[in-house]
Image (cartoon, rainbow, N blue to C red; front, side, top):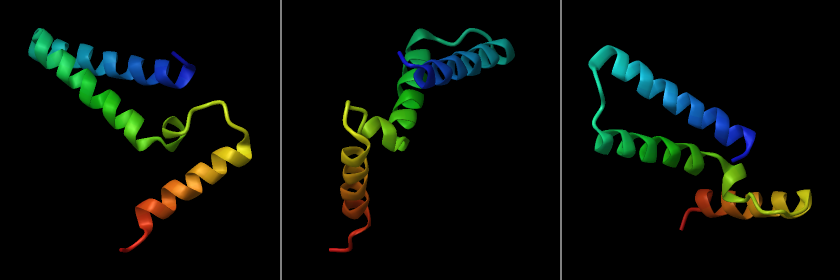
Length: 75
């Protein structure tokens, strides 16, 4: 886990702690779903994770360009 993933995971754990402090213990199924949904938001909204291989900066920028063209092109 890198530092960005750790920060996000810690934020999610804190959100769960806060919920449990205010509302009582969260069921395991609900907790698992919450973590799954929040981590999904984190990874799907960050371009860096969509292209997180060991590429050069130029390769990385080319991948982002292709991705953005694919999401903005009108068919």
